[in-house]
Length: 75
Image (cartoon, rainbow, N blue to C red):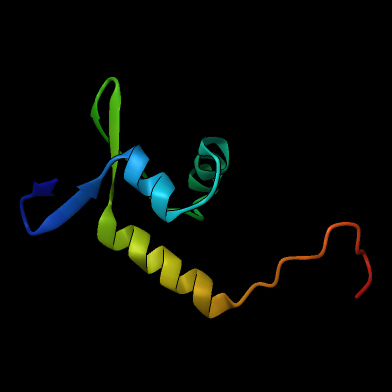
C-alpha cells in the first residue's frame, strides 16, 4: 500500500513473512522501542512502514547476534 511521500505500508501478514517472530514478540519489542512502531489505520487494522522494517533488518544483520545453542550456558 503506497501512501503520500512515497512510503509503502505493509500489513501484519507481510510483516510476519519478513520477520519470523510471533505477534507477541514484535509487540514487546515495539513497547521497548526496539522495533518500528505500527501505524494504526483503523480500530482493527495496523500497518508498518516498509523502509523502517528493512532498516531494522539491516541493523540486526550488522549486530551479528549469535543465537545461543539450546541448553548451552557456557561462555
